[in-house]
Image (tube, rainbow, N blue to C red):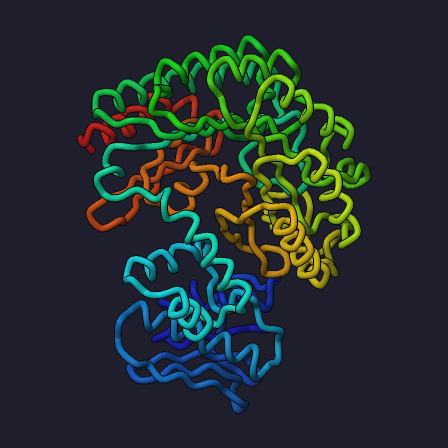
Length: 478
């Protein structure tokens, strides 16, 4: 299908594209901004009083514009496009309605801050945004849990978090689109020197600004790809630059069980790391092999028990729903195995395939969308039955089954960094290759995002410039 936008609607091309992609995930941008309308090509017009979406010489949807507020115009456009696909073309409705953004919880937090009741918020989510009732209820539950962790303006001026990127993995998973490298020890050693330089400079600036680091998150890649000597250097640099008695959470991703052993785990614990991730993604050996992970389900069980015996009391495990050739029976088995371990955090990801991933939707994941909804329903029931509460949620483009990524916690131990990162109510300084920095203006909660280069060589070449820019911002000089 080719889609033609009239001149007055082209400035809304991005949001129109996002809604159409809910129904036509293979749609490409070039199809949206093509030639002028011809017969049987979808057209969209926007004027001061109404929005029209339809086929040339065919049926259409008309939505009246209640006012000229830009946010209301955008919502009404999305509503008209969505209704055309579900009411005229008879596509299956999305459980998330017209919400196509990454952070739907932010809308709900704004409603709470307007003193709306739970019932009123659900009414707005279902009426204005067309959410399915179960998604509206889930957002209510998550945001109610999060409220006590969100900072007020005074606290947000003082407390910051740190993200540190270790973009190396023993192998690259077929679904991965993150900047991650399978390089030799020389490249890793070289990168670590530049990263430690950035850590030291940013730590000194934060101390001069009288900020306090609330949470630290070391991610990747797989940070435990570092050998013991490299790991000690990194941990010591973090301790000297960021860690204090006020640091209440310190996460270190040890996601690949083939990269951890007793010495590394004991070292992490000795540096006050109090939360780690050991990520199976699935407990099916055939799937692990297919997606490029060089470990077995038995390795996961053994390394988890090793971490417990060493003393870790907060362990997260990631699972992916929608992996090639997996269905409901597979996720039942995986959760059955995970249930024996009782991790404090369980993060469920719906598979999202990006252009840079080896795995492509057209080849090995066709037909899974129909099963994903049932798989998610089972996992939600399983989590509820086993005492897990949802505490954060985000969505991605091209996500399987129009679902979401959702974190669950057991025993009231949510990951505070994850909440701060998703809700964007705290400044987070990102260090290392590809790391994102979020700078929050507490006067109006607006946000400025900046990113370090994703290329390893460019990051190392530009390290002095990267450091200066970041330090200037921390000290209010830039």
